[in-house]
Image (cartoon, rainbow, N blue to C red):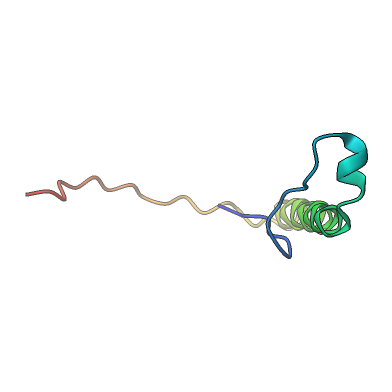
Length: 66
């Protein structure tokens, strides 16, 4: 499962849109998240075009509590 990361907590702070616009660190974090997400989607698409398949894992159920 791919997980897109950023450079800090993925959130902005403020009660109104104008408050959020003043949260430069939060906006920069969200910008980095968007760029990283776009890059990951491009990589997945390039992998599909190159014939790389999604791994199919076997699921094994167990009775862990004995």
